[in-house]
Length: 485
Image 1 (cartoon, one colour):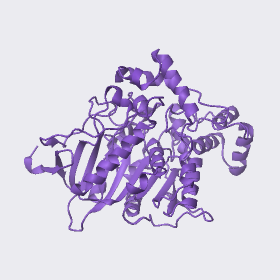
Image 2 (tube, helix red, strand yellow):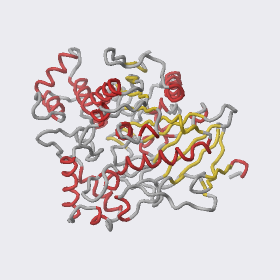
Image 3 (cartoon, one colour):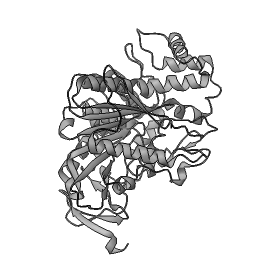
């Protein structure tokens, strides 16, 4: 690498050397906390010991332990999940794309939290490249955090939500260091998608958030996705049974990461229904945040002063159906079974729920109804509730959107699925792996102008606190449709 392409910055932990590109400088694999090893995998994140020699930040680093995942059924999801588990202990890191200095002072900072069902993903995913943000004058930061059993398993002798605690630790490191990269620590927007969006919602309802975050964006998350402690203990019990140990942080300390990762597929399909609660994420993952109150309910009792933009996609549920080849053959029993995933006692039964959906969507066929029921239960209903809680309680403004551009992937069945907005937000439509009959964006070229519009909307919100449409009020539930023109 040409030395002229390298640049060095000294952080609070030590000097790092990044790589210049056409739109600024990228710094990869910068630790914000100590490596989580042994029993420390189940503890709060600790400060990093630091380094004295210049750290090479021009190459990507390790990722959190995770199972191989690069597809949903027949759909290629490698741009979203990234390279999987890249081994190395020092994986609690951030990547930073810093724009070229332009004489306009410190720039807005946007910090992205990746999705992946709380068990997969990393800041190395191709979709999370921040070059377009640096090009447009924003400092973009992407965060790795603990996943799976180290990150989210409920344990009696360890703090809950350790993956979320990692993100909070990253935010503190960013607050103390981002000015060295040209960013304004007082103008930070935290945004995330899917599991990352649920983490953002958890942080938004945390008392620590107002001192770290000025604005937040929740993309296809939910304010009602947390597990109760009773539900989380079902997963804990199963892990202990599979490993034949008392499931505590102390007992897990000597269990290697490889065994914890290999165990994850055996947790798929766990029934987390209790007498009072359904599985808030419909069984698509055994993990989530653990809380006695849902983030939306906690937020309703707070006044954070944080501006919020929140939204979901038109066909969220299709990602979990179309790639498996089961959407087109949907039966009435499938509709009832899908509705039953989100039923609690007492409450309407699945037959009544399906009847209500059919009344609201009289022209929808079985496949469309199934997609609606699943997407609503997983993400959209919890998005509405989170938006309503924020609009009612917070002095910060609330903005809602719905992403509606439909891909023709999987013979047109994928539509505006979960994840579909991501290439538009990051302005990454030219990524080759996104195109093809079994790729996210399908075979018809997506509108580049829509990507520019959505990307700039996210930046406008980060810069000004408004995306350019009316705020969502209690008595005026404005939802901006993106991708229909």
